[in-house]
Length: 202
Image (cartoon, rainbow, N blue to C red; front, side, top):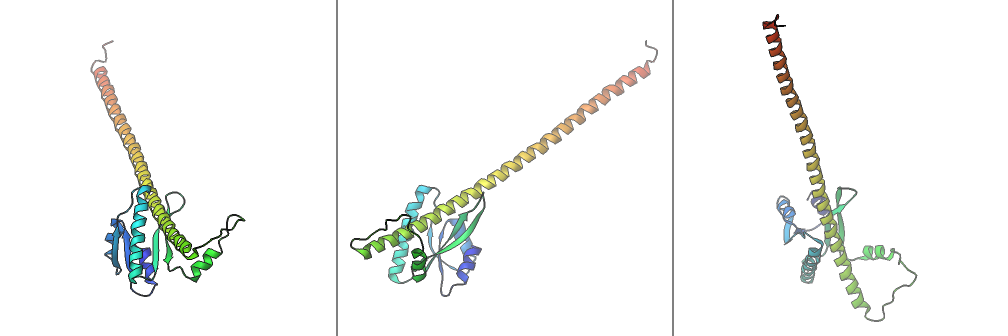
């Protein structure tokens, strides 16, 4: 949430945040940002596609009404191990900067694609696919980051349990040894007391 506030704080105009997940929604209340549409956090890969579909429909509706002019995507991206970091990406508008960035991407083969007819329709389909893939990747990376965080927490808990068990076993063995020593001292003391009471018994 801090990253969202810092990222959007540098931008001019009114900002509305569409939150995915209850935790981010509750934290959004503590900021000066407007809370917009809420979405349920996907708990599996198969739940991502319906979520992306909902977001795209919502975006299209607001774009047609003229309610939004820019769209930024903020999510967590996994790094090595259980580490993840927040990242942001500007989805819309697809301006000259975006076009220049796309133009620098090298085509993977020597056979360049050709659009026979309907170039405008093809471009719209490509833009939809670009938005879909960007949102899907963000959801997948966010889900992977969350699962990595959970796994790391479970591993830490398991390590703490192992350490606690080791300490308890050490304490148990020390107490057990202490009781054995006490019993041995009692036996030795009793034997010495008996042999001292009857020194000529031999």
